[in-house]
Length: 272
Image (cartoon, rainbow, N blue to C red; front, side, top):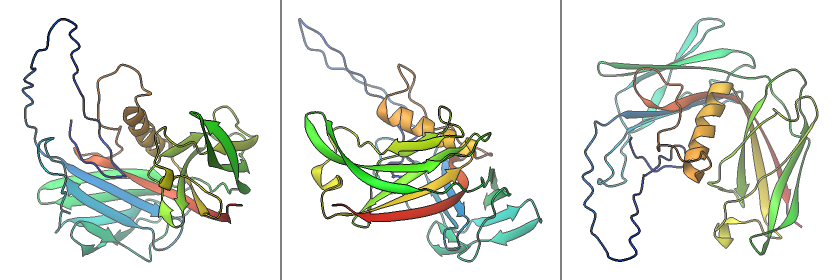
């Protein structure tokens, strides 16, 4: 397992705790080093300016958390519909962009990254877009405290297994919380969801009266949903007593990370 502590890619550090009631014992953990892996995070939306691929590399747990970008890669995105390939330009170390490139609903796109003798590929299908109807804020009593939480409603299309990711901004600052949803229980009906925050969230990261709140809704495909789902389960411990592991990736060739072709829509409000 590899460790790279970023908002897009949070891997889990296993911790061993030994409780002894009669004595104390020092445990010497012999943690072996592992070979570094490339981490590729690619995004393509139905809006121009969102196409970006980030490339870095993992480190052992005992190394620092500075992850320099990998320069000199050849990065292309191919539209399987018209066989058109776009080469991304490196704008900073490890950051590759194609500002004019935007995707089309229902189209499948293939990301190809060449780093030296290594080739990594990933495909993602951009879903049909589903649009938010309304966003609003309600007060909820959680853990003995009253919190303001964002709510989202929209009609979910019938007969399609839709997957969603929501990103929340408070006063233009992005919340690190991960919000993913599916329509398994509400397919074809009114979709209502509340963006709960993790217990212990700092007060400055919560919603308050007078704040500006923006919600970004992304319609994502099934493979990308499972990437975020396994990341969330590992980060929160909701997956039960299983061995910690990296999220399920849709990258081929041995890299970690993901490539997501998604639709995007945003709504904003001022909290009363």
